[in-house]
Length: 157
Image (cartoon, rainbow, N blue to C red; front, side, top):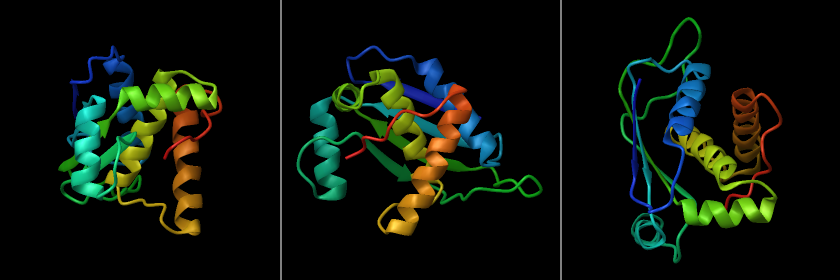
């Protein structure tokens, strides 16, 4: 897998932890090992601009996902074909505040947000109650599998 992490946030983040998480999630979702994913860590101003431009909503947000090849989860017998999954943009400053509010670290919040972003790239959504239940349940399961313990409480905006 090609997983690129570009930290433009000015906040120190463990990029290797994010890479390990992405590998874990994509493997669990049976995504081809040659799939490409990009993670960008943005500052508050950049995240606010992206949030306004793409979601038409004011203020910075925690995570944005930009799918490319519209890949979907595979199965053990039929993995997803190789391709460009897309970009995830994270805002560590927002993650820090959300993590504090939920009683966990910024690092844990970034892992939660990365998992959330990956599921969006794979076609999951949470606009409807049934979709939210499915997506957030899968998110907890994947993150718990990575951490080896219960996943942190969701705090996403």
